[in-house]
Image 1: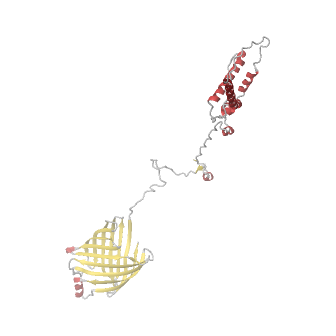
Image 2 (image 1 turned 90 degrees about the vertical axis):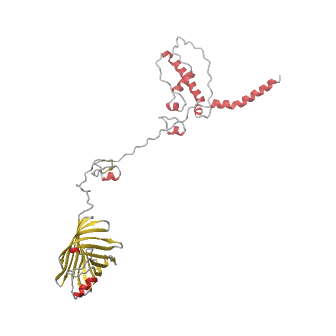
Image 3 (image 1 turned 60 degrees about the vertical axis):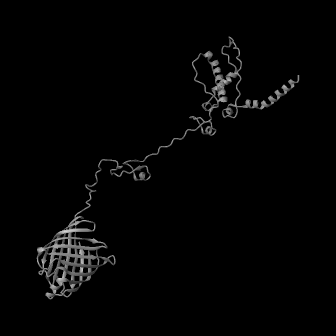
Length: 410
């Protein structure tokens, strides 16, 4: 029949196509199979051969050469090859009788080899495996993974009493300062080197003596010498003030008074004063005093004091001055002063209302902050009923004087 030539042709074509695949399968080595380059052919299971009865004279006959070669190959397996999946290490030998040891070894070797080949074909082992015997060459081929290097623990510089400056400069240790150290969380009190070293008095007791005027005047009424001085003692809020005015003409004391006042600060620029005033000349009198003093806007130094005397006599003194800085040390000081009385007082020679008005101008230069000489001019005029009383006694109501003096404070 014609069907047989066609079947034969198809068989030949299939054989030709499968020939390269069969050749590739026959050339596949365990190393290539482990790397996934090819697939090893499943070894053919040989039919069981009938056991040969050993001859009586040759009781120690050797088995076939092929099983012996396979056994040697398995015994030559190293830990590196076993880790790469190229072979399987033998299990520890069991204590078996000597006559059955060799056949059992051969059977186990064959069984392990078949199992290794099947596992390599079906489920190839991963190439990178962590192994303590992994070398850089095997790691480069992807057969294993090198262990990560251990991170070195930094050495902390420790403080030591034997630390030298050279070692401290290199960061090997820390010099001991010998002082108590705290991180801020300690509740225990650390003693200071000196007792009460941190105690501070923010409101100490202070004092000051000021000579506002010590001058000689040249005018129509002789050459009087004038002294106006103040002194205070106390703290920033409460002080004791002393004020004095003295005038000497031709060696005779014409006027002298002393004020003792309690000073209380009511704001950063203003103080309230209360106390007594005693006149020694021209007539002895004692007054109750109440006033304010301080710095008005534009740095105008202001002083206003109300005096209450006997028989209901009232007097009010007003004064103001301003320092105009021409240079750092040269100062021009204009000033004005006024006195008012509540009623006529013939003993003092004053009338009710505005008694007198004084205008002055001084130019001073500070050689030191505590000492400043000055020159100036002063104009004074009696007003109202006081001027009338002066005319009755033949005195002038107006006077212009040139002056030379010093200012100082301690």
